[in-house]
Every structure is written in structure tokens, then in C-alpha cells.
Length: 245
Image (tube, rainbow, N blue to C red; front, side, top):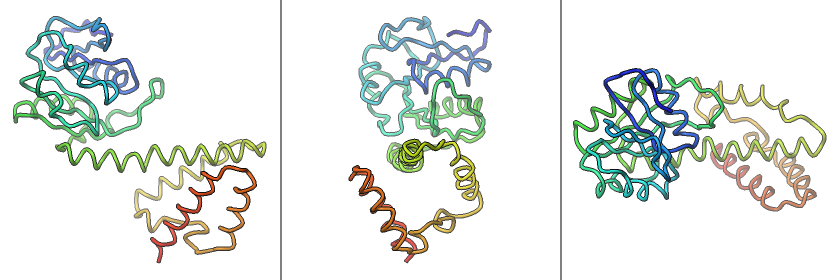
């Protein structure tokens, strides 16, 4: 994808996945943006101000090593890969990390996404911050260690919670019920966190230390024959009980 509008700032986004596709959409009416195939480099313009490598973490170095000769700022979008992996391949490099869950065809309000920026020079950081502010007002500086912490927390908050919702969906589906019935409950769970700490918002049998209900639930799970899910239920119940002690 490339914009035909003659903007003064040009950005090449290398990648075809979820993050890359959304960044292209977020920037398409703000800069000259080019989406580039990470394998063939098809779509790469002869000159661009910023190259954003948006591929899986393990491929960042390989893509950077195969970049056509350029004098661009080169960045990646990973929360867990250090900025320094780009040092052998560019004189100006950094990180352009959007803290959000991305799925290609699911619309997003880009202006709500926090961006975390790191550059190897003040000039690079300033350029990346400027680019991020074209998308969102929530732009922060974060070094590699801070991003690792953010990424770890995000895995718990987003990835693990979604996996647990998947377990809940399976329980209901197996019983012939529609898991969408849980959506009002989930919306309220998130809404409470706008004004309350998670420990204050916690409800349920473990928060009440209702061991009888917990035991009954674990027996139900045992009958389903999935010891991993039973163990998760036990571990999370103990976590909540101990936090409430």
C-alpha cells in the first residue's frame, strides 16, 4: 500500500501482519506510507525517512540485515526485543512500540493507543515521537527494560485473560450455551478498572474465601478430564485468596 499524496515525511513499514497492517492504516492519511513485503522487499521506495520493521521478534535482525542500503531511521515495533539489535545495520535506530492488541480486520481507535519510543540519539527519539503524535497523543519514552516490563504485564492482562475467556467459552459451548452471554459481565469487569484497583474490584468465590464453592468447581473440572484447566483454577483461586488475606 502506498499513498499518492505528496507528504513531506515518508515511512516504509516492513511487514504484512496485524501490527504492520494497522500502522499503515493509522498513518495513511498523515504521511507517505509504503507497506513492504518482509521477504522480497517489494514495495520499498528508493528513499524513506523512517523504516519500521514490524515482523515477529525472531525475524527482526534478519530483516534489518537484508535491508537495501539506506540512510533512514530504522526501528522495530517489539516490546521484548532490545533496540541494540538494530545497531549493526543502521546509524540511526530505535523502537516504535504501540501497546495494543492488533487483529488485521478489527477496527481500532488509534488515538487511544499509547506509544513507547526509544532512539539511539535525541534527534532520533524526537523524530519517532513526532511520528507517534500523528497517531496518538499518548506518547512516552521507554528503554528496553521498561518495555520488557510493559510487555510482560500486557501478556497477563491481555493474552492470558483472553485464553481464560476461551476456557469459559468452551465450558459454555460444551453445555449448549452461547458464550456471548458473558460479554456484559466482561464489559463491567473492565469498566470497574477505570475507577478501582484490581484488588478492590475482585469478586467471586475466591475473593469471598468460599472454599465449598471452589471445591465444587474443581470437582466439575475434574469430571471434564482436563487437569491443566483444573490446575489453573486452583492456582488462580489461591492467588486471589492470598491477595485478599
